Amino acid sequence: MKIAYLGLGIMGSGMVGNLLQAGHSVTVWNRTPDRCTPLVEKGATQANTPAQAVANAEIVMYCLSNEEAIADTVFGEDGILSGVHQGQIAIDMSTVHPNTSRREAVAYAEKGVEFIDAPVFGSKNESATGGLWIVVGGKKEVFEKVKPILEPLSETIHYMGETGMGATMKLVGNAVVISQIEALGEAMILAKKAGLNPQDVLDVLHVTDFKSPIFDGMGSTLVKRDFSTSFALKWLLKDANLIAQLAQDNNSPIPAIALARETVKAAVNHGWGEENASAAIKALELQAGIEIK
Ligand code: NA7
Image (cartoon, rainbow, N blue to C red; front, top):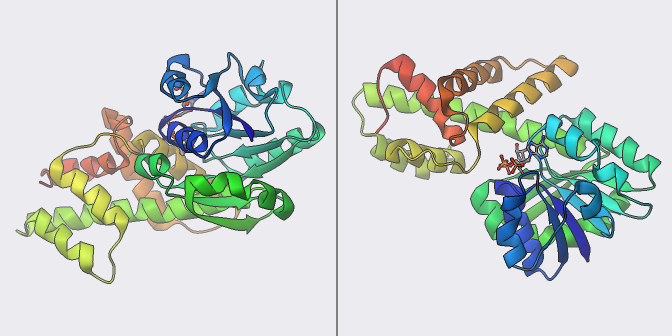
């Protein structure tokens, strides 16, 4: 298929690699054009503007950082909406508020373009290896049409309901992630202060009936003191803010998540926003006066 893909960050670059490997013809665009080069070397075509990228595509896909990036790339000058035409399908894989997805769907519908929100779970490794978990909102029949395109990117794909329900599920999932990061940090600090060896603790967490890949993956970054980015801390704060907004919209209590958000915010304020999300725990380490290693 002819696919336009916009946003070649950590997540988008991995997905485009897998779309090319699946045999699709992919036109790419990124705000910082240099990030296109490795994918052009693998066979992608580079466009100069979002509008140009989508002009001849059957499917338009993007994974952008946040609401501002959507405003610029979708709704902005020379943006996607100024280049699309009737019969195309647009797929937003970014993590944004469900109301943003709904606004996009309305704007695309005015152009005769179908839209689904399809954010993803997983980070750098899952994106590169086609192991993402995708959650989808939109018309079921549109989802069925694009499912074969999403399959090479993912381990599983879940249809969640009407437009915005993929985005909603993504925030619900990340509510669990942020709580697990806070729990891991507090527990590991307690362990260290009480005299346990951190790696021994992780070995136990790895096998218990409360084990979690988050504990394994983020735990090992703490012990190794390697905070190189698979999923940026600044995006975890963005997601925590979106979760808080969604909770407010729905009058839903989130005492634990609100507390975890303060930890993430403190870590970003310390200047660790570009590091891996597990760097949130460094803010707890500062409070405790120790490092987990
Ligand atoms: P990255 O690696 O930080 O990539 C973010 C992408 O978004 C990257 O292509 C950026 O372009 C692009 N971006 C950011 N702001 C803009 C604006 N204003 N206009 C156009 N493009 C923009 O993030 P990830 O790939 O890890 O995550 C992407 C999403 O998935 C995010 O919602 C996560 O929460 C989940 P750049 O290269 O900086 O020019």
